[in-house]
Length: 179
Image: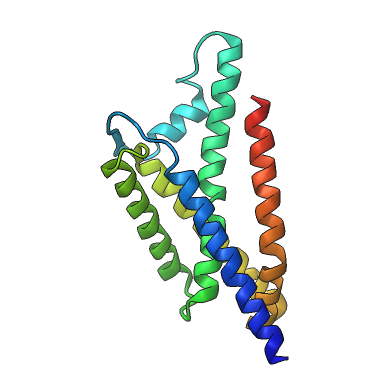
């Protein structure tokens, strides 16, 4: 029984390291010539949802709408696993402290993106990433409630995390290539 626990922990850490590597590749993949920062909360989200930034020609509008959906959903989805893993690996399983930790990680990512010109510093990204991490925390708590045991919840995550990760990347890849 002890070997099973060690194997599950190894699998959890391997998948977590793989997730962090993919997260770094996603968040720091494109260098920009100039720094850009948005400090106005939900400005980009409202613009995307209202279609104000969409160009008038129909094909361009479809492409930009696909980008908007991918950007909004993607910023939430990519931080869901972080919420699960932070709660799983920390002794403190509290929702608000772990959500605050995720918000701090997201803020650090945005600061690094601005300093090294790897993206646009955007308060909306911090908000969306934090929402995603919060959902991850809730997913972990739900699994813990359903399993009634931390070891059983770890097993479920060890099984489900690679499956969900692969499925998410395939869906995002197919969706982004459609447009």
